[in-house]
Every structure is written in structure tokens, then in C-alpha cells.
Length: 327
Image 1 (spheres, rainbow, N blue to C red):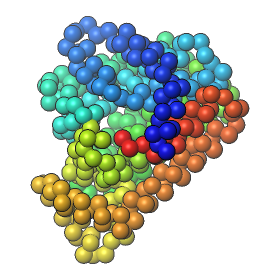
Image 2: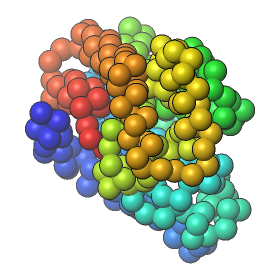
Image 3: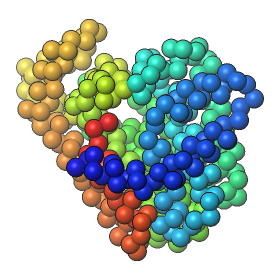
Image 4: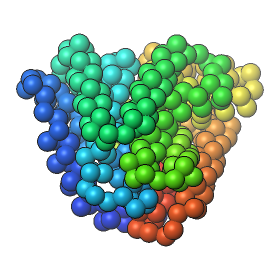
């Protein structure tokens, strides 16, 4: 099922993706070859370009198709890449999209500064929209994502993280960027307030579902599928919904065992397999899937005010694919 949806999506967006790739390359334009090399290491390493596509088709669902939606869409890929570069330094991650994390090839200061450059490029392109509200959306995104990373860093290692705290973190780290891409598409098209709110709602719920699906993949996908080692969140001391829900449902013995697994600095594949079985038995996997499904339902419902179109059909397919994908 997921492969069928992916194939349909890819057929529809192929022309847009080619234009997005060209725009990303043409607008990178750093003064230093090193910055281009570091930025390109991540930017052109197989990302889905989800955020640019969402911005493009949020604009088109509102009747905006001038060609400028392609240029403006790369704002959100630059923002996304910048946060990944920064996050990998903070998390001391070794892999990203199946490749060495940038800071393992170049020094952390160089990688951080490259991330800063991408943020600056995003803002420079946002200014070209001549829409102050787009600038406001970008400012909100960067502030919220920074706050989310700070909150997650402060909560690192906590075994009593609540579901509400987790939801706030993923809203800030993931949903606000996807929401902002969709909302900005409405803004540049001059859409009504009702349509702008509908696309912002779609983006929020899609972002929440997308992150929950990512958190599930950390326990259900292989290293080859993920492009990084499974169980990375747990090993970095980050509690996600499958663990949070399971810990809440566990008895004293199971809870003590799971906390011990999380605290063990040595990763044992057999123990991790047992942990995954425990998360399934305690309902953490099913609960996370259910919550993600609920957000997808709400995302698709938000599009109800729009007339049928290719862009509407695409946005609905992306919502479905967000929780059915394998990577």
C-alpha cells in the first residue's frame, strides 16, 4: 500500500522536484567552497523535499501558480537542513540519511556556521516574497525549533517525561516547520483567512503524524532502512511516545527493566529486540500508531473546504503516506 502511494506521489511531483533541486543548487551560492561542500553534503543526500512540496501545493490549492512558488519553497528545505546540521552536532550523531553526519567529516564549528548560513539564505529568500507575514512565520519557526531543541536537551535522560511534554517538543521541533510551509503557501497566494487557517491546521496535524511515525520507525525499521542506527533516540536519552506510553502502562518489574535498558551505555541487539517486544505487549507501538492515524484524519479533514484538484489529491496522499512509509 505505502509503495503504491509513494509511486503515485513521485509521478505527480517529479517535474516540481526537478525544479526544486535546481533552485536549491542555484540559490546556495556561498562565498566559500567549504560552506557549499558542507551544505551540499546534507542538502543533496536524498532528502524527501517534503517541505518544499507542501509549500508549492499549498499555494497551488489556493490558485497560485506563477513559478515563484518553486523559489519560495526552498526556504523550508534550507531551514530543515540547517536544523539537521545543528541537531547532529548537539546529539553527537554519527549517521544521517545513510551517510556520515557532517560534523564527523568537518569540525563542529564549521558545520554549525554552515547551518547558520542556510538559515540566513532562507531569510534572504523569504524577504523576496515581499510578504511581512511570511517573515513572521519564518521567525516563529526558527524560535520554536530552537526552543524545542533546548527543551529536548534539558529533558535528556529523563524517564518520567510526560506525554504532554513530548507532544510540545515534537510540535516545536517538527510540526511548526511543516505547518509554516503550508501556511506560507496560503499567504503568498493571497488566500482568505479561512483557507490559510485550514492549511495551517493541515500542516500542524501532518507534522505531528510525521514525527510520531518517525518515532515508531526508530523501533520498527532496520539500520539500512533508516539510514542510521535503530534505537538512536533511546540511546541518546530521548523518550518518545512508544516508550512513554509503555512506561506508563508497565508494572514495577517491567518498568525497572526498561529503565535499565535505556540507561545501559552498551547497545545489545538482542536486548533491543526484547525491548521492542515489550513495547508491543504494553501497547506503546499500537498507541503511537493510533495517535498518528488520528492526526492524519484531522489533517485530511482540514482540506475539506478546498475544491477537488490535483494539489488537494496530492496533499491527501502525502498525509496517508506520512504514517505508511517505511523510511
